[in-house]
Length: 389
Image (cartoon, rainbow, N blue to C red; front, side, top):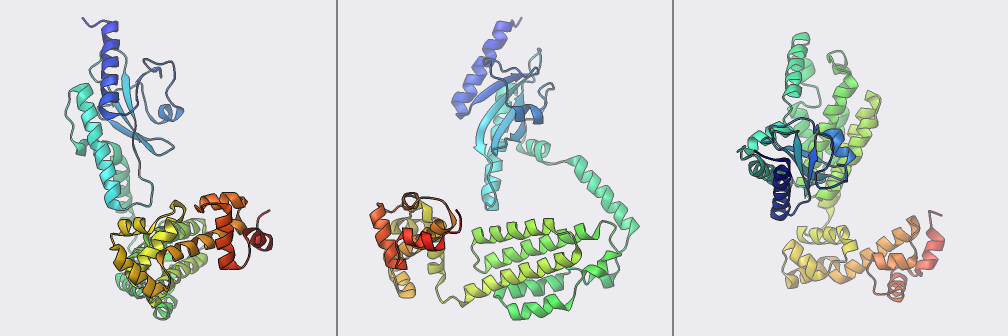
């Protein structure tokens, strides 16, 4: 017969095994929200999103407010009150934006870890697909959506005349995306001006027209942004643009403003691609300049740039000098001074702090280079251009 002391010993053994084997912190929590082996209670966010009073047949994957991944596994073998092993943070949840491949790899790792922990605790095999479906596939919600689609298509038929004029129409969309892809602003304007599809749909949509059109415009902007990326727009800038316009769409309260916002976003993206195409620099040099601007606060060396972008150092040095009429190191210094001007004008950082942030060797070195580029000392520049008190 298993005694309570044996039970506690087994829990301690499993806890230590998991901690040593995976390198994660492990908590063992009872249905009364008490932590075995510790007087500290579980975090409030845990008790708010997980029911410790019930046994869960599948591992539960939860994310903390700090986007850290935790795995919750019930001990299904115990004859006593329910206990749950909580492991984590075991892996950081990827923050957007990230490439889909990276995000998928991260989730796949968590799912396999959850299956392995469940096997160790319960001697029960689960497939990764089972755990994925349990945690990330909401059957009730999908069923609700299917019911709604059936009801709506029974309730309403949008005739062919209206359907061919909505923003999602393939021909209309392809014409817009072709303009974005090639930076053809002049060709885009008549396409956007040719039709305002919103009034045509107003009487045909069961849902609130504004909300439906918000979804359609957001989809159009996301697709256009992807097209711009494929034409050379840096990924980080693309995501920033997406975030900005999607926030503006969310705040929009009428169809006219929404249509204007759609036009602005599409023209903006097309203009950016057009500007990229006008630049005489090669794609190689564009990648280098963007990498330097993006990583300015990490103070990348020329070696870092070549290694990160997989370029031959001597080839890159010659190409960059030829196209930019300056060395890579000179370009880095130029960008540092530009950033220093922003910091002096827009922030309350001291000159010494700015010097440190931008990795100048000392304040004298910073002042000397700043004056070389601007004709003023940092102090003089701040006095003339300071925006914040």
